[in-house]
Image (cartoon, rainbow, N blue to C red; front, side, top):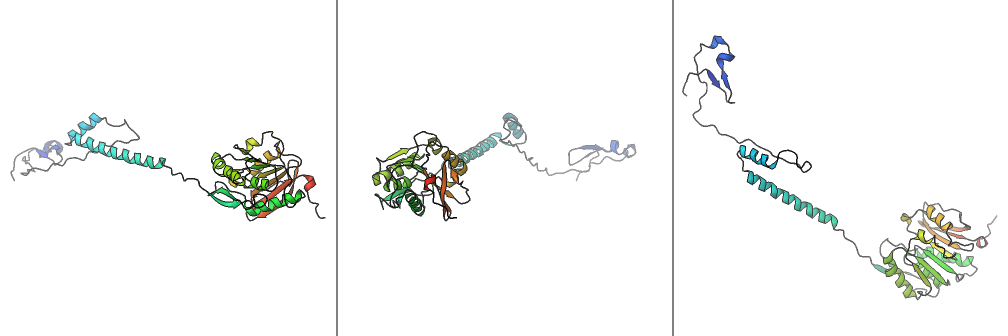
Length: 311
């Protein structure tokens, strides 16, 4: 170590300290000594520089030229840094594009049919009918359908067939109720179904299979719109909507005020549990209200068809 006279202390932080000024005049006579002298060069460590940009605040912070100058000042290669950032951005964009494509791709299952239903009685008895697989179209159960037609036939005075007349099948779907009505003696049936696919792939083939095309009229329309039409009163009306898609209070109010109801009309309503049905529907009174598991069946009819109540 070499000893050199000096009045200044060189600190490791690079700050020059004058002992005579800081310690007072009384120490000015001390010999000047250099406290540190290192023969080996000190290693210089590059400071860590972080240049970050947020996608949320694009345009905020440093500009691209300022970033390059800052990187070069601390000994970094600006071109290498920008190329790496571009690659990372491309990867993020590719990942984002893949995720958006996956979200847009929605698998639509094809709608298929099978023959599980059948006509219970009449001229088309035991003929199989098409129905849609799944719960998109829920036809009336055969037990409920058989009970409903039995009550209507007894009320009309003929236990084996229906009185001739016109039948209106609301929310027809497969058309099994209206087809059963034609098979048992109705002269004409009107089917109201809003789904064109069901009409062309289920309802129309069922009418062709049973041979009831000439006695049928299909209305591809919404039920609430059809009930406002003035096509005359029907002798029978069946109301079998999808349970979760209708408000029965609103629906039955529309039915009661519709021109489709006459003084001698019979109305068959299928409804779920925990649903309250009124004792009357327009000028018609409730004839019966039965339960089949979670399915309920209410039938409204004219006063002359009411059974006398026991005292």
